[in-house]
Amino acid sequence: MWRDGRTLTKQDAENALIADWLIRLTDNHRNWGFGLCYLYLHNVKGFGWNHKRVYRIYRELELNLGIKPRKRLVREKPEPLAVPEAINQVWSMDFMHDKLEDGRNLRLFNVIDDFNRNRTVRYEWLSQYYWSNIEEVQDFATQWMWSYNNDRPNMAVGGLSPKQHLAMAA
Image: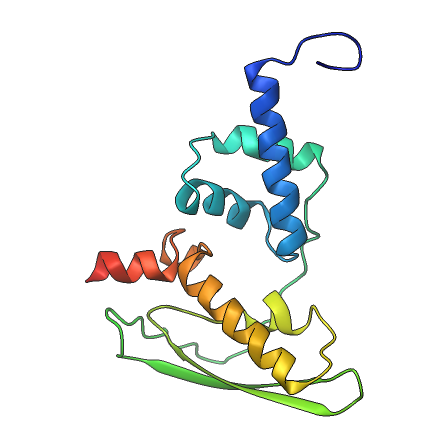
C-alpha cells in the first residue's frame, strides 16, 4: 500500500522490482549504462520487460552516466580492422599500469581472443578500487573474469555474454 492510501498494483510492484534491479546493477557495475543493464536483465536474467519501460525507470532514478568524449587517433590512411570469424584466429595483448594503496606499482598483462573481445579491465574494475596487495588484485581479477565471460552482456557480440556467443558459434 502507498503512503497516500492507494493500493499497490501489479504494474507498480513490477516497476519497483525493475528499479531495485537497476539500482543494484549500477551500484555493483559503476560503468554500466542503460544498454548493458537492460541486456543483462533481458538476455542473462530472462526478464521480458520492454526496453522503453526499463529506460523510463532508469531515467526517473537519474542513473544516466555522463557521456565522455572519445579520444581518437589520427591516421593518414585508416586500414579496416580484421574481424575474426572463429576463436583462436586473432589474439591481442596489452600492458596496464596502476598503483597499490602503498604506492607500489602494479602491472597487468592482458591477452585476449579478439573473437570474444574481453577488453574492459581498466574501466570495469582496475580504476574503480584502491588495492592493498597483489593477492587482492589476483582474487578480484579471477572473480571478474568469470563474471565477464559468463554473466556480462557484451555489445560487440549482440548483447550476449561471451559464453552464450561461443555456444552459438560452436
